[in-house]
Image (cartoon, rainbow, N blue to C red; front, top):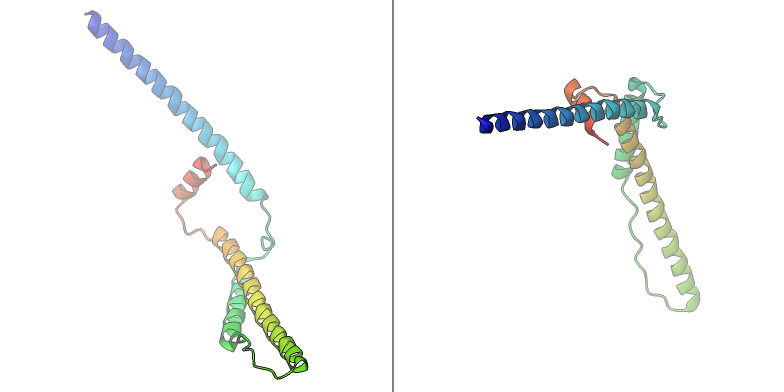
Length: 144
């Protein structure tokens, strides 16, 4: 008989612990959900004031511009030619420097536009409701 009472007491204590843990998880989830919603609403980006249609037009324009830069071709790296004297060597050095600078600047232009395109696509992805409401809820409730 004493064994049955001890088993019932253990079950009650396990149930109590389980309820406390469950209440803590629900409380943390509710607090974290509210915090994440407030963070999402307060996070202003450069493109947050644009409409979805404007974002789509900008994304298309940047993709077209990047494709144009790639289609135009990157400037080729300069090949160094042999020179006969010092004056020709200086002119050759300057020519190679100009060519190298144009290669770097073309790379910078493409990288800059790709960075802006990435930011625009990230802003567009935030506005696209392609995930289920349950996944959005779980992400807001349980991500730190």
